[in-house]
Length: 346
Image (cartoon, rainbow, N blue to C red; front, side, top):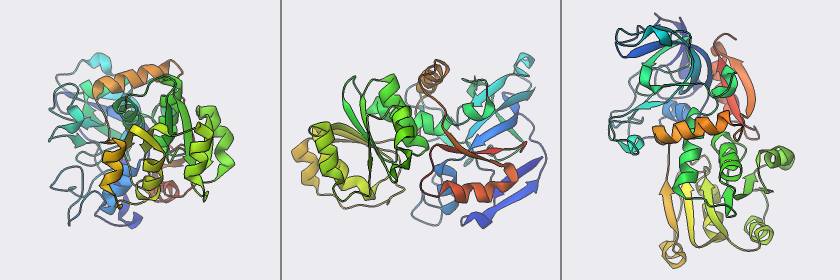
């Protein structure tokens, strides 16, 4: 089969198109013919070594074992089953839950042995992938590409909204609102939980699209008076912040949060380190959450909301599998709206 492997830490030159044997499903696994695989920050940061502070980087302390096939947002058709899996699964169109874990229900994502597809296992930048049958779920939509945009970004966004306990009518500020996680934060907070959403993006060319996703207000982080604008349009401080940017908007986020407000972060594309005056936290009684991925129960709830039409897929562009380098470079460009996908069948 054709696949794209990461051969080591570094730039996109570490991505190599190769021909390798089709994997054989183990006894509790199925073989999936990959139809679509969305790109996430996670596989780029894994390649760049951004998850570690030493010479090794990955979801696990030992780092990634190269070569590795990246890709975690995967949809496809089951074409073969392992020895202990019912053959009735053959022909099913599925979306893959993106990690294994021995953690108990509700804390799977924080188990010490959590292992991620595309990092600890070969992932979806390939024509075929093997994965545990119990972690394959019915696609929420009929289209492979549309169903592939939710797995990691959607699960992360859903978990973020659940962590801060968004209530109907509360105001939530969403940073990076035009990205994969951000655009889903907007939809989930507004369309599923009934919050008022202030979306923070770069260029306001996407203002109408953000409003269509559920944003009540859309503001640009390029404004010299961003904090003042947010406080003015909301009529005061916001209840919560859902952040994927990090340093670049951190001080603004804390400034516009109400006393007793909640701050949840799942990414740091705008800077991985920041200066923090602890007095801001304790004098404003701010609760902070670190967040990534979520639980199987949350994944199922998210899929139900997608099937019900409450959450819509947002796709910016698609690329053929062999254009993975170009796709990852494009992903890092500012100004895109929604997800970038690789389609193995071109």
